[in-house]
Structure formats: C-alpha cells, structure tokens
Image 1 (tube, rainbow, N blue to C red):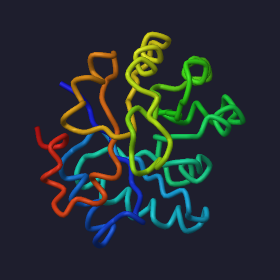
Image 2: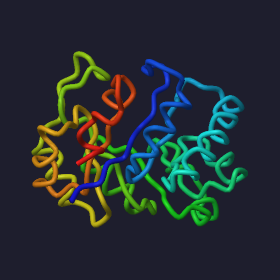
Image 3: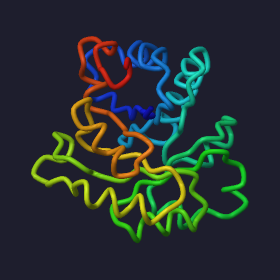
Length: 196
C-alpha cells in the first residue's frame, strides 16, 4: 500500500479553497502540506489556523510550510521546509517537531536533509508536470538513487498519478505527493490515488 501527501496551491483551486481542503482531508491522505508560498507570514498563519481546524475534524495530519516559528505558536508539530531554511534551524527548534520534512532535488540534498534531522523527504520533480513547465522530470533513476541514499521515507513529487504510482514504489518510495490534480479536479473523489 502506498501513502499520498496532498500539497495545496489555492491559486489552482477551482472553488472555495477551504471547502476543497475539507473534501480532501475527508479522504484521509497521509497528510496535507499547506504550501501557499505566495502568502505573507501573517496571512499564511491565519489560513493555517483554519486549515488546522479542518484537518483535525477529519483526523488528517496538517503539515505547515516554511514558517516554523508560527507553527510552534499554533502548536502544529509538523513542518516542511526548503533545505536552506532547514540548514538555519536550531536543534532546539527541531526538537519541537514530530514531523520534519524537506524538499530535495539531488542525492546530496537527501543525505543532508536526513543528517539535519528530517523524518521524511520529498524528492522531485520526477515526471514532467505543468507546475514545472519546460523543465524535464528527473526520472525514476534519480528517485531510485535518492531512496537508496537515505533510511527515512521518501515521497516522490511531480506528475504523480495512478498510472505511475507503482513505478515510484518500485524505486523504494513510500508514496507520492499530488498537487495539481487534487487542486484542479472537478471532483476530488475522482482522484484515484486517494480513493483506491
């Protein structure tokens, strides 16, 4: 069995974002990463409070992104960081979090993230995706190398769908991350990765 992490991007959303988030979290993915990179810190935190309530009602883990000091204030013990922020984070700050993830784009990134205390990593982008137009995916060999280089769970991102999920599992990944499909689908229940 595989695990799916849903990554948000409200700018892709075709309807009310919080309504969609409620529908997504009700499908019980492994977690929801509230990514929303374009929001200022205060706006992000206001949204995170609402997202935390929604995810809590559905017993789905919410992973905040980037603003780890704000996550601490909100009592959210799950954080996903770009690698450059993970490098700057103190050991004391890391100790607050039960779940600590980072985005990795090379084997060296993955090894460094594990050394810095990550409990999981997201490796990508694996396949061509509209989110990274014009940039070819790094491919399955890249994913296989990343998975072999670390002992923590690896989740693939970038073009992950029901047609290639078995391929990423065969590389050693624990599961995959989806963003575009879950944000743009007319019916989130039709996203097969979350309903199989």
